[in-house]
Length: 327
Image (cartoon, rainbow, N blue to C red; front, side):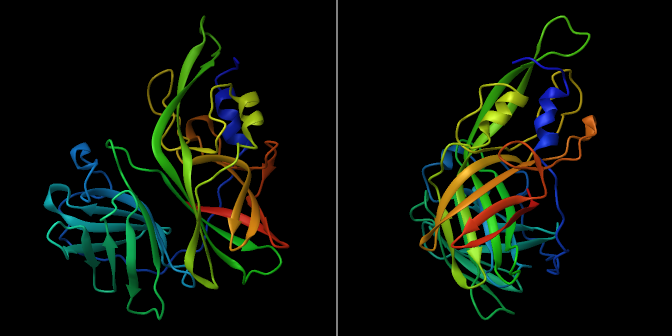
């Protein structure tokens, strides 16, 4: 399907509108022991089949909304052991890692306000055994997965709330499967004699992580339905996208050269059903990140590509909204 240059961006305008949460109150740790830049380093592929390497995921707490963000863990890259949590308000927490076993398959991470232990013996399914903070009576949680072939899984953090009972709320986080697939879409640009190919990076959703104020254990789902919003995406952009729910993990390159178009953090996940605490939850989350070069502010949409204020969910007689907090 061919369309003008703004056509490739239309889905990101139709589908998406961002929302802001109140600033979090966690202060930034001033530790200086981390030698590897945890925000930018690339996992070594020669560590793919070992407990060592890079892991990414989410950290949170079932009652304290201030403890929530993306976690990046370095377990042995360049002989360093450290972790960084990018909190949803833009601040960060840093942890120093101390191996507890000779093969470093179990590592204690700590700082002045908290600690956690990660067990990497099954490195494809790492397990946290304790996430403790000095000011909390109960443990937090971490869900992480290994970065392989030098590629990190994309992490999108969010929250949900019951429309009629705000006390019913929690975190709604999405992680990619770590495999980026480029979808090539032909776009007709005025003044150009031939269509221009736009390379759109996509990553299928791999894990949903949901927490609730009344439960200390996060609920996870890794079995997803076909994307209920796929038809409107194909109509607005073109064919070639996966039928699975997906995200756009990085900016869309500008087919005409120059600065990238934006779009990183967009998600298309319509018509989903997840078993949450014994009951099926129906949910839809389609959001497009802003495209500044095109003057598109970004926003949410429903499964018919109509503008919406948020994502939506229904569960056990309740209904509510899903919001994006950070990418």
